[in-house]
Image 1 (spheres, rainbow, N blue to C red):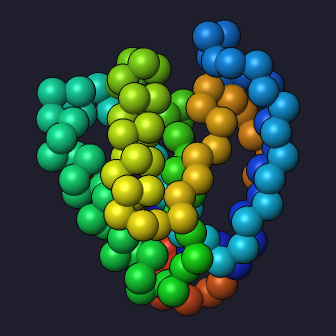
Image 2 (cartoon, one colour):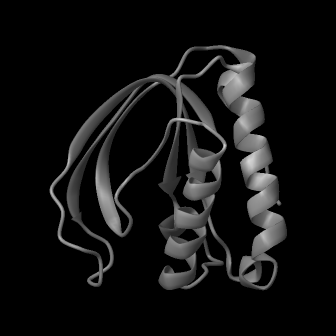
Image 3 (cartoon, one colour):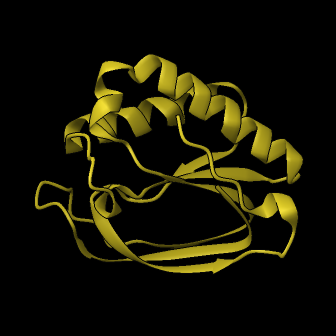
Amino acid sequence: MIYCSKFAYKTTRKGLESAKTKEEEKEFHDVLVGFIQVEAEDEGRASAVETKLVKNLKWGFKKNNAKGIILHSFNHLSESKASPEFSENFLNSTFERLKNSGYETYQTPFGYFLDLEVRAPGESLARIFKSF
């Protein structure tokens, strides 16, 4: 998780051919961005992993006085990857739980490579790593 005073993205190209065609460019301020890697072993324990993820995102949000939470799939960097279908459903479910809890929540386009702009302050809780 990275607390960003500014986070912006622009779709560049599809990473998954099955991804819906989308040209999108957005900018956010004062948000907590979850760079989320869904691994193959998460498929058998999705509920527990999702609960821990939501809890940690809420904690990071509060500690940084953020205005929103952004979920960003980072699966393409891992050797252990869940299926694209599972990963997308997992992120959508996490998004719904956060939204239903009253958090301003957003997602970057799933299945795309993005140009990213990340501005993060040099504070101790601005960068948080958690593995489940």
